[in-house]
Amino acid sequence: MMFLLIGFRNFCLQEAIAVGRSFASIKGYQIDGNKEMVAMGFMNIVGSLTSCYVATGSFSRTAVNFSAGCQTVVSNIVMAVTVLLSLLLITKLLYYTPIAILASIILSALPGLIDVNEALRIWRVDRLDFLACIGAFLGFLFGSAEIGLLAAVAISFGKIIPLSIRPGTELLGRLPGTDIFCDVRQYPMAIETPGVFLIRINSGLMYFANAKFIRERIMRSVTEENDDDATRSGRRKIQVVVLDMSHVMNIDTSGIAVLEELHKKLVSVGLEVAVANMRWQVIHKLKLANFLDTIGRERVFLSVGEAVEYSCLPSKFTGLQNC
Image (tube, rainbow, N blue to C red; front, top):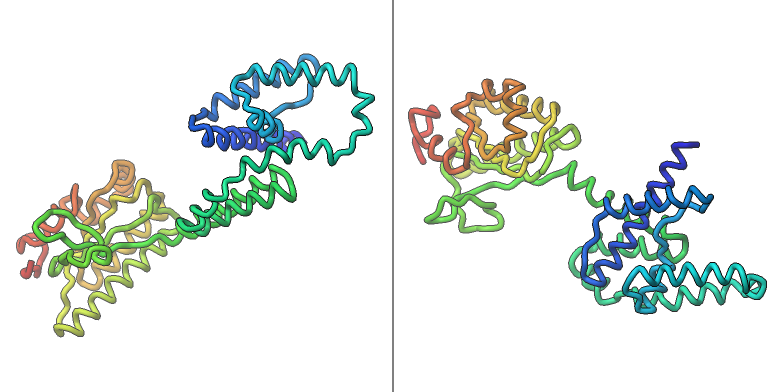
């Protein structure tokens, strides 16, 4: 039961912060979520001394205050005094007021919060973001703020998870006259280095959920490139595979194991392997796992350009004479 209460409380805090950030974006200022939580926690501690209800940021009252043009916290003091006087003096008069009339006060403040142009802009830019927007709107409209927030979070996670477990890869080439290496599909003028296969892993994390997919993606790209080269020239062209890991921020043991398997597979078919642009977190873990000793520390480079220059030296990678 205690865990349910704690979870409900944390969800209410998140709802209050979400409401605050939505109005902050309208007014053009920023709020600190940590300070908001501290303020609400202190408020509830003080309120508990007098047996008050647990309180969070109310969307309905915030909308009414915003619609009325309130600028400072004095409006909350005025509202609290008004509520207190109403409870003491005119409760009996308000007892028979239809709920629909009370709801109309809140609903009258809502139209000004609906930005149709922004919703259309989100639709044009990203359809999945628009789906999350509509999910939050419908959840709030027909349910509650909690349901709307849950719907938006669930849809957002549904968008992020497929991207994280199925990351893309890029085949790199050098822009003419520069030392810049970029995606050959985005920049068709980029020139591929003969004998060197450059591939970039487009994932911030290389971990248990996507490591095997990355391995299969790289092996398939290498195989397809070799098949294309064999069809065109009758001989194998790729002799060195360079992994650009500039986008990989971190790696776990599953990712390290996949790199070791990838290295074994490529070496077994006669290909050399080098890595470039590794982040310090990644290179530290690979060092602890002895992966750097496995591939050879001389084949770890600070940039793709250095890896290509090293690969083109005949004395370094055997058989590579056509750079």
